[in-house]
Length: 406
Length: 81
Image (cartoon, rainbow over all chains, first blue to last red; front, side):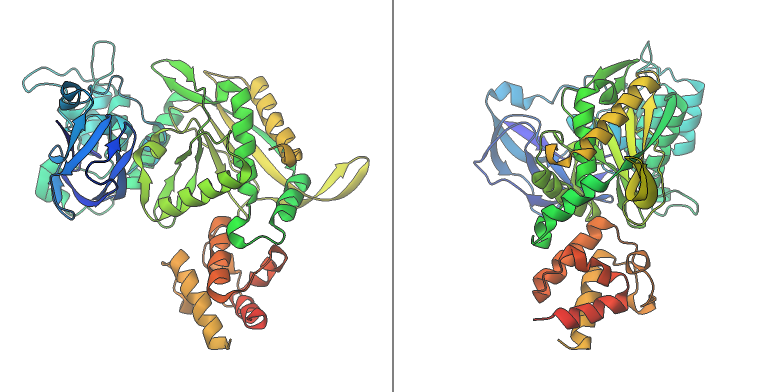
């Protein structure tokens, strides 16, 4: 018999409110299933289970405020013993990608260690780099709660930043009363998370930038024709073509799709495009659409719509925030010409689309009005060069010029 | 559908999408999407909601009628079944 415990969704979280069970007692469950919804200060987060088994019964009532690490439900495992054990302590502190950038909710790594056991026993000496110590002091993080990834296990600046991004809401809850009301000038949780991830990106990633202007005539005509006579619920947005084209190109140009972890690039076989979504008056998140290269346009559009709706309602899955392999950011219809993105670590590329506009365009020896969009790439120079980046952008252009093949 | 009903439908659906914007305070002749800071997905959701609520198809070629709040109200009255 195993216990499903309240996960730690950030170092500042003491407890969460159980708002919904998504499975009934007696239901078989498998690793990765979403079985509960927990409300935190940062919104409602869907919680995945990390073992196979059967959902035996809940141990707490709906609406209960449950401390981190306390049992929520009993799970009968396939092999009892295996279930009773805590999940393995996050093997490599997965430098949760989009999560850092965006994430009030905690990354998968934190979820995998529900009880959030401090990795260093009390009294044991923790080696900390000076810069890391300074940042920890500034951000109010407790060093003993941070996993060091330096060569001898010391805590590095990047570790503190990662932790700060996971736990963006200022001082940890353990420093109690003072944490109740954020001091004037304190950044909101999401803004602090964006700040930490973007500062890390600009410090660690040698960005190079490419820009290309693309004729959208074929893509827009395709969308117009597709939407003719369709109910609004079945209509496509141009953005779906952007996401699909980038996904397909990223599948081929693998040096733009994956994560840079522990000093090396690990390309991803799957393409999960992180879609930058603006949240009104709050900030930005880039949750992933899983296997976006394999989805047909209609289901892709439905996924985008579903994801954006949930994100704006403050409800999304921890895995959606951590699984992105490349990001697409699009300014949409009411913006400016071009967007130059900052890569979300540990990803290695971000493709930006400006606002489509009418321009005088020369084609086939004639000048005429065309709808065009400025497309940019920010690439990680540790992983790729401008030459390959140019081919990657040209591949996206080529796909957008033949939308029927998308 | 009278003006009041069209106004109510539009204001309620916009409030759902942009709860932070006070409908009373907007420029009725200004750019609707800029007044409410709504993007393409928000706009498609608005069209979808009005379609369901009022039974008006709102095909894409008519989107330009939603360029302003006042224009959108006039459109809804004109097209109501």
